[in-house]
Length: 88
Image (cartoon, rainbow, N blue to C red; front, side, top):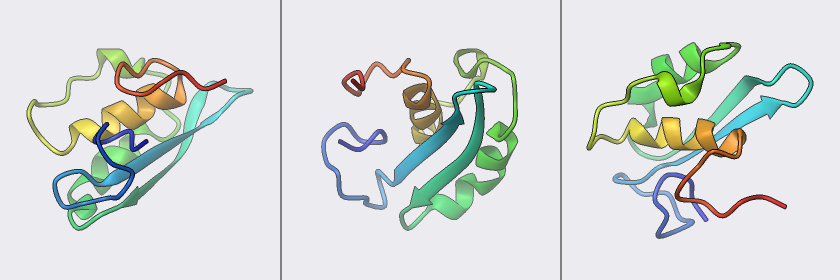
């Protein structure tokens, strides 16, 4: 299931596919992958997440915007996502 949409696994302009990759040893985001027509709008924000120790839940993302998918992907990397089932 797409962390961005919760409805489809296929990226669209409204709901791009965004994944954040976490290093389990350091508990930091080490990479972000994004696929979709408008992901170039989020590259700066994605880069800011890489290596940060700030809690993603304390970073404010405007609502409703496409950039919210970035927060959702980071939350999913840490098992905090409300819209994706827990990983086993």
